[in-house]
Image 1 (cartoon, helix red, strand yellow):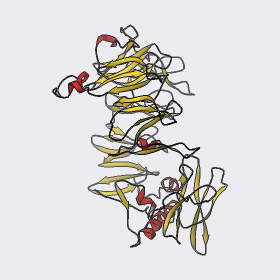
Image 2 (tube, helix red, strand yellow):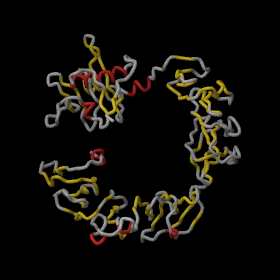
Image 3 (cartoon, one colour):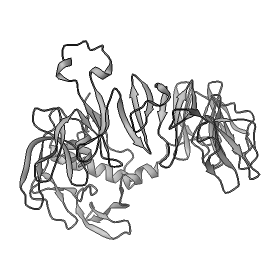
Image 4 (tube, one colour):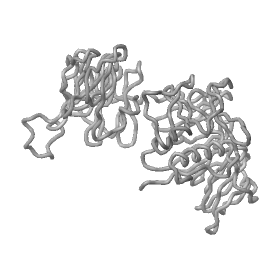
Length: 452
């Protein structure tokens, strides 16, 4: 699985197997990723160089690369390590003495000769490169556009002719000839709202215009996420404010140190180091007085005079929220939209899985169950005192190893809290506690305990 390949290990060795015949093509391989449809970037035992391995176990491209990238646009970015002639030279020498990157095609033929930079991407004739925390752009011939590296650089759109570079805090354009030109995003629309309000690029900032294409306010706001859910948060020179549906400011000028966006007609705002609550008309519904504030399931978690508690928008103290959305998320099975479901059997909840339409996929008959992942769900088998994987037909995966405690086997830096001296039973009880929390039958979810 791709997650396994991306997870760095000290000794990542794999078998390459032909699924139709079951034949082992290569053993003890270090695998980077599958590519070109049917090939795989791999390295042999004890070798740090990658090559492209064909399905018959032969090398389509002999191992010779330090790192390799996935094929995009009929090309793959590859990097070459320090050559043998440089072994005794100082590590302070230029990066060209240590690592160079180039581009090859699927047959290993050179498209772009090795360059003294790390190459990070290609689009529409531009390569993005970095060196010593600077970034730049190369053309197809390997020419460094603009003659130097910049504070940052971004590739153009898929059909774009102009890339972007960051110079002295400002984004400007860089064309194929290496000339500095206006930012290609200037004047483009970020978001267009049904009310006629538009958020548009203007330099490194955002201009708000109305249906008449004229600015609704004189400010050019910082580049933050804009939506049409008014009042919407905006920032100007480090201070926050809110725009109404007509594009005007709720409070002019933007003056809040920090804020939490509007929800249910109210927003948390910070003034002179204290938090209060603003209503949708721009009036403080609750004067700033709290040291800390965090929206929490329709209420606000606050602290004042070293005491932590919850309030509603009027400031009335309320009980800790039930957090129903968080609870229900424990039962959902993403990304297929199904969820884990239960039935009561003589006072004991038994669990199964339903699909997005509510059809039962696995009958609720297990004391606990995980969601499906890669076609398998894990369930506890009391007769074996182990968790084992089953498929959608509830067939146990005979060639797969079972485990004593499923949750502990899937967390790298923590362990589930102990709920029984028996590891198997402890894992089952922990999973049942999580599921019962999802049904709002338990006050708190079960905990993970850090191993550090």
